[in-house]
Each structure stands twice: as structure tokens, then as C-alpha cells.
Image (cartoon, rainbow, N blue to C red; front, side, top):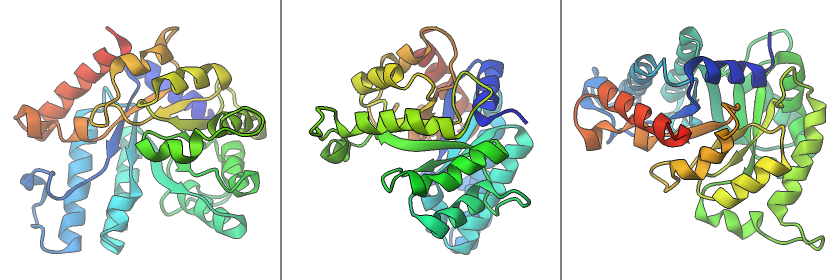
Length: 295
């Protein structure tokens, strides 16, 4: 199997689109016709979450190379929510859409190994929530990341490390200046370059990527130069204030394997545009693609 980085590159080129659709279900925003069993029990709500995701993935299959379900929304429903989450991962695979599990785990030793097995599988068995890639908090250091890097090497999985996140509070730590004169996020960017040697790729890009917010366009441009083999997962576009002009430089020399995430502005587009769920999302996705690629 090709590396995750190569599969991602292929998917983006095939669909001529770098859109990553975030699947962050909110009961009060999902159309009522997704909830065929009502909203009175966790089981009924979980069924609605699955229907919501399935309808969106099916409608946007030609424009969306990857989806990103945020596990917290499903965990909040307990076991029924996690069952719906697992079904969504399976459905994405059936549709040929790459799935990036937004889990943001970060721990050490055997705990990290257990998380990696659950979400990326192991040598001889699939994990119960197996995805193509995961988001990970790197702040516990290299030993906490090795179980995920191992999956990149042995199972052709991908890992996105939190580098400069889209939220305003990211400056509290990530922009802090070290004695060397570097900022903390820059130091981490250098470490990511080194860690990429732990998971050789068959692509010009590594399968070890980074999360950098569209709300920090200057840092995004700088990190593109600092970390040339790094595929970026870019949240913050749309509802958080990121614009097409902020991320367009990522594609000035072609469709590189960077993903621009949109959740609310895409999946809940019907609340502002009218029409049904699918039509509004498809219209929003076309506009987003044009905005990002400046076409």
C-alpha cells in the first residue's frame, strides 16, 4: 500500500480539491429529518449523527478527499456515540474517502501504545476505531509519539502533530520565546523535521504532518518554508475567520497534500443558505474550493 502521504496526494489530485470536511455533530444544528427515531435517547441521537455524516459524505464525495470526525462529540453520547463514530469510519472507507480521526491524544508508554492500537491498528489486527490518520498532542515528547510513528512505518498511517493551533489562546505557549531566540512552535517545527526520519515515505512529503491554523497566516507561510516535507492540516477556515487568501500560498506551485478543514461553514451551510442539507453543503464546498485555489 502507498504511504498515507502518497494516498492523500493522490486523493487531492483526483478530486482537484484540498477540502477536509470536519464532522462535528451538534444536535441543535442537524436537520430534524436526520433523526428518524427522535432525539429522546443517546441511541436515537447517535443514529442521527451517523445519518448526518453519511448524507454529507455521499453528497460531497467528488469534492472531499478526506473527512475529520471529532471524537469528542461522539464520546459525549457514551457507547451509542462511539458505535456511530465507528460506523462513520467504516462508511468513509466504503466511499473511498480518507478519514483523519481528530482525537488529539497525548500520553506515554503503554498508554500511548493502547491509543495507537485503538485508532491506527496493530501489525496483525485492526483497531476498533481504525482511521487513516490521527491528530496527536506532541507536548510529551518523542517517546510518547513513537507508537504512532511505528504505524506510519508499518501500516502506512498518518499522524498530524499540533504545531500552531487556530485558537486565540495558542499564543500562551506556542509563541513563547526560548533562550535560543526561537519561539516554541519553531522549535517544535524543527523537531518535526527530525522525527520525519523515523517514518520514511514514498512521497515528496512525510506521513508525519502538522496542524497549523488558517488564523495564523504568517506562521503558516513561515512553517511551509521551515518544514518543507510536512503536510499541513489547516483548521480555522470559515467560521473561525480564516480566509482563502490566508491558505492559498500553500498551493501556489500545485496541489500539494495540504488539507483545509471546514466544519460549521460547510456541514451547516443549509442554516444560512436555505435548501436541504446536501445542496447547501455542495454549494458551499464549490465556493470554498474556488476561494482556496483562487480559481
